[in-house]
Length: 399
Image 1 (tube, rainbow, N blue to C red):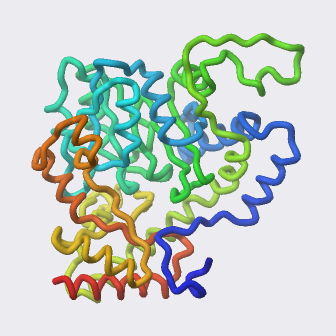
Image 2: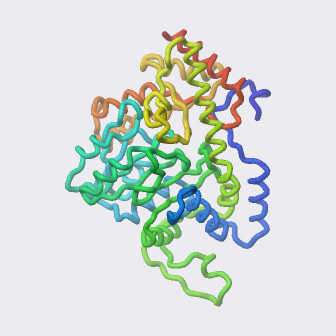
């Protein structure tokens, strides 16, 4: 429903249109609806996207999954994470990151984040490594790439893997490094609110052919050959080589994703323009520089040494004001979210990990202050002005 009719500025609206509809309809007329040629085609497309503009660089192997959450589980399992292992990760993330570790019987070790970016702090990572540490799971928060050279160096010193959670974008870059370039693997999300979406879905990319081969088995129950691989020849027996999951992307999903890839960077440019508009308009309306992570905290973006996917635009009002502002924005018809409350403060992980308040103070403060505002390419200038007006009114009234 359009905002003009509803009077509401939604937190997110997808941009799927005729190209995606036409692609999806073509699959309906084919033999395969699930794990078939469209998935293989999308995997090849995404691999090429990740190395675009890099002559001579071999595209990574891509493994499509039914969602990012299961992609993380499959990737960790393929990296032999299991009971007794520890994986160092960040408290500034969605539940899927820690859930995947826990579901394998391993232990997430949470370390604090950088105050200016919200990204995992490499110094804290180095200090947390112990005899049971198996690997690192950094999260590229809001579309900002973590300091991968530092994390890779730490991992190499201790013979650890690095699996990147890049649910917030495929199009980011930092100091010439892209998602998956320095990690042993990277996992993407195509959830409904993501920059590239099939409603749900995900993918893993890795440069390791043997690792990719195992991931392909694990996403499909652990069987030796998928149906599409057996089709077209005399009947072939398949085998179950290890316990796997039902976690594959489908051809219907891939048909929605493929037409979006050529548009993803133009849409990122539009989000960047909206981010710049938010910061300028909020500064002018409130009279102070509104604390955000999108630009304030990312010197490598300011110095043009990197590119954010600008998946989210967050502001950070004072802790005492945050929940009042959320309520006021809701009453004004402005869709919002909180990305994220520090994960260790949520009930299950309080009980499971036992990390008391004050253990990870930077993440806790960001989690207690953050509000995510509407940000998507079809957000109009008039809608953004409405958001700015509502934020300014709530900020001034609360202050």
